[in-house]
Amino acid sequence: MTAAIHSAPIPADRPGPAVWLLGAHGGAGVSTLAHYLSFTGDCERQWPRGNDIETESPYVVMVARETDDGLKKAHERLIQHREENLDCELLGLITVAHSPTLDKSVRQYRDVVESATAAHWRIDWHRFLPAASLPALPRWHPLDGVPEQTKGARGAVPKDVIDAGVGIVTAIQRSLPHLRSGH
Image (cartoon, rainbow, N blue to C red; front, side, top):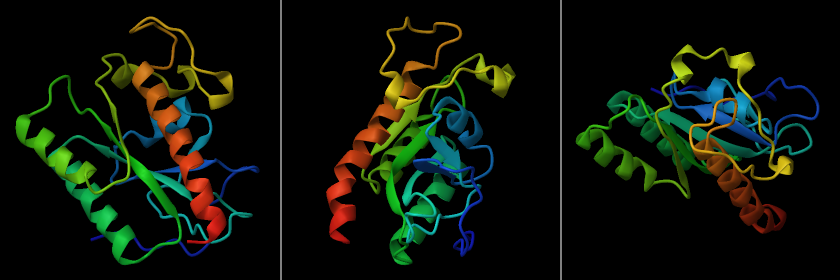
Protein backbone atom coordinates (compact mmCIF):
# COMPACT_ATOMS: atom_id res chain seq x y z
CA MET A 1 0.00 0.00 0.00
CA THR A 2 2.58 2.62 1.05
CA ALA A 3 6.35 2.90 0.98
CA ALA A 4 8.37 2.02 4.03
CA ILE A 5 9.62 4.74 6.32
CA HIS A 6 13.12 5.89 5.42
CA SER A 7 15.58 4.78 8.11
CA ALA A 8 18.66 6.64 6.86
CA PRO A 9 19.08 10.25 5.82
CA ILE A 10 18.14 11.00 2.24
CA PRO A 11 21.30 11.65 0.21
CA ALA A 12 21.58 15.37 -0.58
CA ASP A 13 24.26 17.92 -1.25
CA ARG A 14 25.21 19.98 1.79
CA PRO A 15 23.43 22.00 2.82
CA GLY A 16 20.40 19.95 1.89
CA PRO A 17 17.06 21.37 0.83
CA ALA A 18 14.99 23.41 3.27
CA VAL A 19 11.89 21.40 2.30
CA TRP A 20 11.41 17.93 0.87
CA LEU A 21 8.83 17.35 -1.86
CA LEU A 22 7.26 13.91 -1.47
CA GLY A 23 5.57 12.53 -4.57
CA ALA A 24 2.47 10.60 -3.57
CA HIS A 25 3.06 8.59 -6.77
CA GLY A 26 5.26 8.58 -9.84
CA GLY A 27 4.55 11.38 -12.31
CA ALA A 28 3.22 13.78 -9.69
CA GLY A 29 5.43 16.65 -10.90
CA VAL A 30 8.03 16.63 -8.12
CA SER A 31 11.05 16.89 -10.44
CA THR A 32 9.68 19.99 -12.13
CA LEU A 33 8.65 21.65 -8.86
CA ALA A 34 11.98 20.82 -7.20
CA HIS A 35 13.73 22.43 -10.16
CA TYR A 36 11.57 25.56 -10.14
CA LEU A 37 11.73 25.96 -6.33
CA SER A 38 15.47 25.87 -5.67
CA PHE A 39 15.07 25.57 -1.88
CA THR A 40 13.25 22.23 -2.20
CA GLY A 41 14.44 18.70 -2.93
CA ASP A 42 12.92 15.45 -4.17
CA CYS A 43 12.86 12.86 -1.38
CA GLU A 44 12.10 10.17 -3.95
CA ARG A 45 8.77 9.12 -2.45
CA GLN A 46 10.34 8.28 0.94
CA TRP A 47 9.41 10.05 4.15
CA PRO A 48 12.40 11.95 5.57
CA ARG A 49 13.41 10.93 9.08
CA GLY A 50 12.74 14.39 10.46
CA ASN A 51 14.20 13.52 13.83
CA ASP A 52 17.70 14.92 13.22
CA ILE A 53 17.51 18.45 11.86
CA GLU A 54 21.33 18.56 11.72
CA THR A 55 21.20 15.80 9.07
CA GLU A 56 18.13 16.68 7.01
CA SER A 57 15.16 19.03 6.99
CA PRO A 58 12.06 17.80 8.83
CA TYR A 59 9.75 19.72 6.47
CA VAL A 60 7.75 17.89 3.82
CA VAL A 61 5.20 18.96 1.21
CA MET A 62 3.31 16.17 -0.54
CA VAL A 63 2.74 16.45 -4.29
CA ALA A 64 -0.01 14.67 -6.24
CA ARG A 65 -1.39 14.82 -9.76
CA GLU A 66 -5.07 15.75 -9.98
CA THR A 67 -6.34 12.34 -11.05
CA ASP A 68 -8.43 9.82 -9.13
CA ASP A 69 -5.40 7.57 -8.70
CA GLY A 70 -3.05 10.42 -7.78
CA LEU A 71 -5.41 11.76 -5.14
CA LYS A 72 -6.04 8.25 -3.77
CA LYS A 73 -2.28 7.76 -3.33
CA ALA A 74 -2.00 11.16 -1.63
CA HIS A 75 -4.85 10.26 0.72
CA GLU A 76 -3.11 6.97 1.61
CA ARG A 77 0.17 8.77 2.32
CA LEU A 78 -1.60 11.39 4.46
CA ILE A 79 -3.16 8.61 6.51
CA GLN A 80 0.23 6.90 6.82
CA HIS A 81 1.79 10.12 8.15
CA ARG A 82 -0.94 10.52 10.73
CA GLU A 83 -1.20 6.86 11.84
CA GLU A 84 2.53 6.19 12.05
CA ASN A 85 3.16 9.48 13.87
CA LEU A 86 6.18 10.23 11.71
CA ASP A 87 8.73 12.77 12.98
CA CYS A 88 8.79 14.83 9.81
CA GLU A 89 6.54 17.88 9.64
CA LEU A 90 3.98 17.73 6.83
CA LEU A 91 3.39 21.34 5.80
CA GLY A 92 0.72 20.69 3.18
CA LEU A 93 -0.21 19.34 -0.23
CA ILE A 94 0.47 20.57 -3.75
CA THR A 95 -1.86 19.27 -6.42
CA VAL A 96 -0.78 19.52 -10.04
CA ALA A 97 -3.30 19.77 -12.88
CA HIS A 98 -3.36 16.73 -15.16
CA SER A 99 -5.07 18.54 -18.05
CA PRO A 100 -6.46 21.98 -18.91
CA THR A 101 -9.85 21.03 -17.46
CA LEU A 102 -10.71 19.32 -14.20
CA ASP A 103 -13.50 16.77 -14.00
CA LYS A 104 -16.09 17.59 -11.34
CA SER A 105 -15.64 14.27 -9.51
CA VAL A 106 -11.85 14.74 -9.39
CA ARG A 107 -12.29 18.32 -8.10
CA GLN A 108 -14.62 17.07 -5.37
CA TYR A 109 -12.19 14.31 -4.39
CA ARG A 110 -9.32 16.83 -4.36
CA ASP A 111 -11.35 19.02 -1.99
CA VAL A 112 -11.80 16.06 0.38
CA VAL A 113 -8.10 15.11 0.30
CA GLU A 114 -6.89 18.69 0.73
CA SER A 115 -9.13 19.10 3.79
CA ALA A 116 -6.88 16.56 5.53
CA THR A 117 -3.85 18.86 5.26
CA ALA A 118 -2.84 22.09 6.95
CA ALA A 119 -2.35 23.86 3.60
CA HIS A 120 -3.04 23.28 -0.09
CA TRP A 121 -1.49 24.82 -3.16
CA ARG A 122 -2.64 24.14 -6.71
CA ILE A 123 -0.49 24.23 -9.82
CA ASP A 124 -2.54 24.88 -12.95
CA TRP A 125 -2.08 23.29 -16.34
CA HIS A 126 0.83 24.89 -18.20
CA ARG A 127 0.72 24.02 -21.89
CA PHE A 128 4.49 24.35 -22.40
CA LEU A 129 5.57 22.04 -19.56
CA PRO A 130 5.06 18.59 -21.13
CA ALA A 131 7.53 19.49 -23.90
CA ALA A 132 9.91 21.56 -21.75
CA SER A 133 13.48 20.53 -21.01
CA LEU A 134 13.89 20.55 -17.23
CA PRO A 135 17.40 22.12 -17.23
CA ALA A 136 16.11 24.94 -19.44
CA LEU A 137 13.42 25.96 -16.94
CA PRO A 138 14.17 28.91 -14.64
CA ARG A 139 14.63 28.59 -10.88
CA TRP A 140 13.31 30.64 -7.97
CA HIS A 141 14.44 31.08 -4.38
CA PRO A 142 12.54 33.04 -1.69
CA LEU A 143 15.54 35.34 -1.21
CA ASP A 144 15.04 36.45 -4.84
CA GLY A 145 11.79 38.13 -3.80
CA VAL A 146 8.53 37.81 -5.68
CA PRO A 147 9.14 38.86 -9.27
CA GLU A 148 6.86 41.13 -11.18
CA GLN A 149 5.79 39.14 -14.19
CA THR A 150 3.18 39.00 -16.85
CA LYS A 151 0.84 36.02 -16.81
CA GLY A 152 2.26 33.35 -19.08
CA ALA A 153 5.60 35.13 -19.52
CA ARG A 154 8.11 32.86 -21.25
CA GLY A 155 11.26 32.18 -19.28
CA ALA A 156 9.61 33.00 -15.95
CA VAL A 157 8.67 30.69 -13.11
CA PRO A 158 4.86 30.45 -13.28
CA LYS A 159 3.03 32.62 -10.76
CA ASP A 160 1.19 29.66 -9.20
CA VAL A 161 4.53 27.93 -8.55
CA ILE A 162 5.92 31.05 -6.88
CA ASP A 163 2.68 31.38 -4.88
CA ALA A 164 3.16 27.78 -3.68
CA GLY A 165 6.78 28.57 -2.79
CA VAL A 166 5.76 31.64 -0.79
CA GLY A 167 3.06 29.56 0.92
CA ILE A 168 5.59 26.88 1.84
CA VAL A 169 7.99 29.44 3.33
CA THR A 170 5.10 30.94 5.31
CA ALA A 171 4.14 27.47 6.58
CA ILE A 172 7.72 26.92 7.76
CA GLN A 173 7.70 30.26 9.57
CA ARG A 174 4.46 29.31 11.32
CA SER A 175 5.86 25.93 12.38
CA LEU A 176 9.06 27.27 13.93
CA PRO A 177 7.60 27.92 17.41
CA HIS A 178 6.09 24.41 17.26
CA LEU A 179 9.44 22.89 16.29
CA ARG A 180 11.31 24.75 19.03
CA SER A 181 8.89 23.60 21.72
CA GLY A 182 9.43 19.96 20.76
CA HIS A 183 5.74 19.25 20.20
